[in-house]
Amino acid sequence: LSGGGTGDAELFRVVCGGDPARTAAWLTSSLSAGAVVEVFLFQIVGRATDRTGRKTPWLFLSPAMSFVTGLAPFCFPRLPVVWASRLLMSSFSALFGGMNMTAAMLGDVVQGDELAQAFSMMTAVIGVGLFVGTQAGSFLHRAFGDPRYGHLSRAFFAACGFLHNVSLPETLPPSERKHVNLRLADANPFGFVKLLTRSRALTVLSLAVTLVVCTEGKVTADLKALWVRDVGLSLARQGDFISYSLVLGSVGGWLGARLISRIGRRSFTTVAC
Image: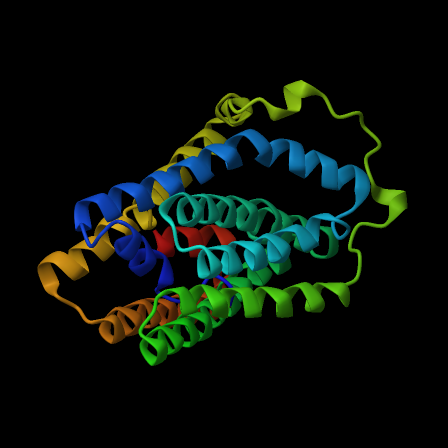
């Protein structure tokens, strides 16, 4: 919900003086910088939650940062503020509120095929949240004629998420926590290379996931610039396009959970690819 709306691209366009190329460059650089932050912190955050539990404070960091990075551009619509807000929002949501923390919490309570089904259903739920968030942000943007209001809707939903997380239980009890000392080496950004040395199957799977991620959404900034510069999509049509893709994602998650239960994880992976 807090990631929805079309405010990012539009607000970047406004603070970049309407230049599509400059808009795409600044938006892409904020996403790339956020990815660098993720690379350095992803592993050490995972180890820290294994030691201290999943909920406090980790589960509250993403909605808290989404709230701050939603309000900051609304109050101070300047390029440095918008750029830094996008960087922090993308990196914190991935580290503490996205697949990293959610996967760890799911892994604490379910395993095997049940875990695979849970991931598929989570994808469907994420799609619903993004659909509603996108529509809410786009509606406020159109109603007030200002992309900052898309960020205001993000701040509102982030506050709701923060309050919701208060009611979530801790999934990793003290008896199952790993009491290991955190080391500087845990922040090694190249630690993922170990995945390529353990087995051929894991190497192939890791490379396949890497290639999929490279193509699935990292050109979003260029795509949005294309909408404005070459296609001439209105704000309403941009929101509809995003919502359509998110509905398909939700349907895919719902369908995936059912296919996994019928044909198994390996066959489902083959069919999906």
